[in-house]
Amino acid sequence: MAERENRRDRREREETPEFADRLVAINRVSKTVKGGKRFGFAALVVVGDQRGRVGFGKGKAKEVPEAIRKATEQAKRQMIRVPLRDGRTLHHDTNGRHGAGKVVMRAAEAGTGIIAGGPMRAVFEMLGVQDVVAKSLGSQNPYNMIRATLDGLKQEASPRMVANRRGKKVADILKKPEAEVAEA
Image 1 (cartoon, one colour):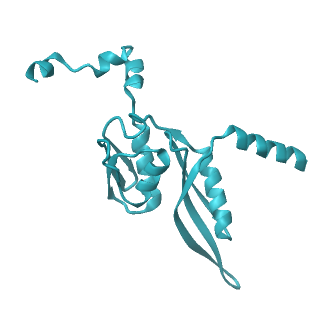
Image 2 (spheres, helix red, strand yellow):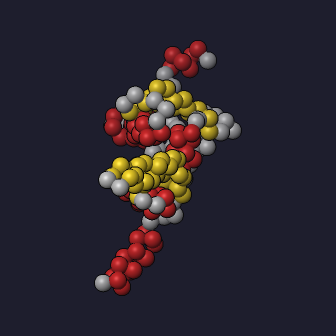
């Protein structure tokens, strides 16, 4: 039985590309029981391949390393793919929201860097975005900020995706209207 599990673990490591992970928050939580308090830890982790895939997970355990391990495993299972322009920024500006957490994300020119706070920065770094301007409005709760950021990133669409949806060619989507060309 143990031999079969070792084989499966090895196969999973070979199939999945190497992921980077970032610990965003650790919380000490307590449970009051008859004899006093029992302490545990809750971890929030963001995982990504830095090439357009990102996910987050949360884990709870009696010890910090175990909570981080659980959160990392959950994050790897819940990854999403986000199309990036030139592998460095977003295709278009987008808003995301989750509960009271609202985020605004804007595509940026090369060399801008990641201008974003706390948990949002972790998501962009693990995603592989190099240039983005983002602002968090509303909730400062890291869980809600990450969920709102991922909500906005799920709305991201590349010109190829838009062309497929409309049944057109990518060149037709990217082509400027003649009125704009005449003014220039």
